[in-house]
Image (cartoon, rainbow, N blue to C red; front, side):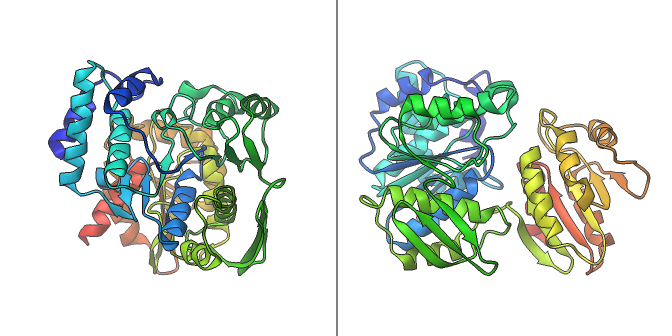
Length: 421
């Protein structure tokens, strides 16, 4: 496996190279024609949570469920699952070999993500899943998962991220994401503030649109919630196991997609209850300790930071909040800090193990730009994320809180360390 992953990182000159021509060509060689329904899930934030809820509910209903998500936190295998169990190394190597043979036959290079997407679909077909959930990697229109024809597509949210690839405003970004919709096919859109240009784009595609607060929605009742949608109402639902206020919106989005697919993938009320109560996903307001409370969150754009800030505000400790914070240089660091700074008392800043990592100096400058007055007690630099985390654990009392956030790399570095304790 390590040899394969090293190889896949080297066969294409760019990590991200938008376009469907290459992946289409290799897919034609492989002749991947899934006979089961596909659910494509895109959006700026929330798509991982929606995938996890759909996966849990459909598994509870007894379906054989394939799920393809990215990026991974600890092992590549996390990206490909059947019935919530990650692919084993031997199976992964076999499907990699099949994709490689097809790639060589048509003399086409593939990016790391394109290669993995085809491998996942090949594995799902071989093991005869009954439904597959595919998470968009970046954007939608030119993302590798968009070579496949969905039975239902979802856009969870539209906000500013990956602007160098998708456009510099919500209108452009939203149009890229809406391109996962198909004509006369269920299309669930959970963006509450939908830009007019995106609605026009959706109307041009002419899907069977289900728009939040129009075709479906929810009512928060504190310790439970109600859903309404195309198939009627569902009352007194359990609060999702996934933590955070935003998860009710993600949950009702998942139920809207299941309503749209009811004729081919019926689920019972008990399956919905069980799935919502069991769905988990690492790194999304994940609490790994309670005294002190330690929270892991992969929030890496301003919209996600705002959601994290709201969640932190609703669980405020008696003592201090320590932030273990590192981000990638191509992200809006100042924008993230601005959204969450009121919830943080001490910033423990570092870099991550990636060529794209922001330097400590750059993060320090961005904190200043966001109005954080840096001194020896409020901003402390560390050589790496693990050192920052160890310091936080040593300093924090049981009444304090540690929040690790800023990127998948930041969270994965802490998770690796945590598993060794």
